[in-house]
Length: 243
Image (cartoon, rainbow, N blue to C red; front, side, top):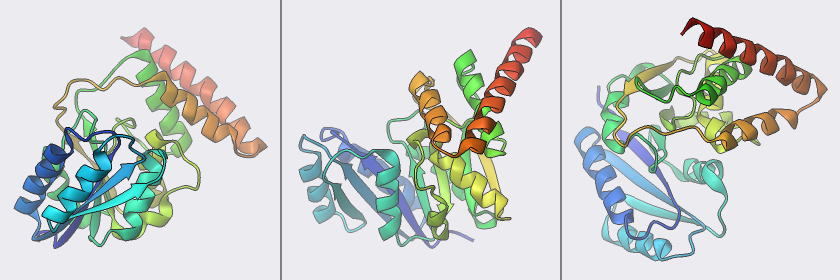
């Protein structure tokens, strides 16, 4: 059964020259797979002509709507804003600057009906020691098997907005929603997608954000983080010895 309504979240900042192409790509994919869709462009505090360009696109195309954030607030804030106004049965959330383009969305739509969350993952992804360490640590902290936690490409059922933590790093929000839905007994899954823009190396900042995020909790959470850092280090050492 095809999806009846779909919302595509498109966060942008200072992308005036490429915004029209991004929107056109989203519309081309969505129109082939859903009879009723919307593109929610969130202008994350741009200081170029992105806001004006977004308004022009919204005036020209019915499926396009625009939200303006007065200052840059990051991916999670933009996601919250879009989710608050989305009317689709599912929200497609992704990083338009990432390694996977919106053309991979049909892979997620194929099986969406059976799941509250569908995450994309790359079969070929970064395997640097830092990326492996990050993946192991995310798995231990969230209690969920996420082979590609740095990739933001997902379908979320509309009613899962409450699963976004109050404070969470941009790179961890999809994993947190997935893990919380799983713990709530909802059906979740992951689908392999193709990287179209080369590898997306994990920045050391993502690891720093993750550690800072968990250190902000109580003493038990900080103790857990310390233990898991030691375990992750051990698993990484073991994995490298076996290679």
